[in-house]
Image (tube, rainbow, N blue to C red):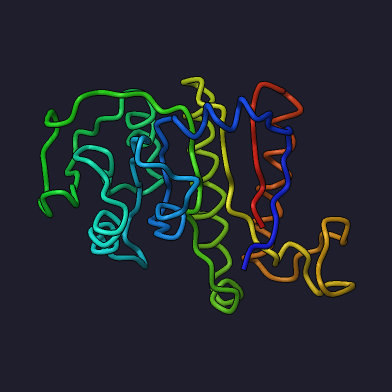
Length: 219
């Protein structure tokens, strides 16, 4: 359960309102985020998932709950480690591959969606089992870190600099106290937690190099 988030760069009220009206790309189907009050019906959502451990049926239920209009909730079947596909998606919003629409519950071909540009990304994608990460650490490092780097590189190239990153309380390792607070020591104790901690550091370095980025680390 995530109790708080840390802004790498504090966001003003104007920034928050601007992002709330933006075209948002979600990496991984996080139905709780799509149903939240912070995800208004006026947004155009593109959800990116490779269905490694999820089901497109979730998007059908989200649309039923939120009443999203046509073209406001489109699922893109894509792996973030596929650099060319991610680049094409962020660049113009279209892919030369199969897309899936929960409005029609059907697969659609390239050219049936108008081009658009993203203004924000909410990044939930990644493998997330602590025990499994100990057994297959290389897969976790490859998937979680490489996929995130590919995404951020495409965002930087095309000027998409609003990012919410789903981190984890595992970055605190064995906590010094409970409840955990923001000033607790960061010390991950497993490969999954380290992927999150490494990515937090990468995002801090990214912001230091370019302060125009708005990045929220969600734990």
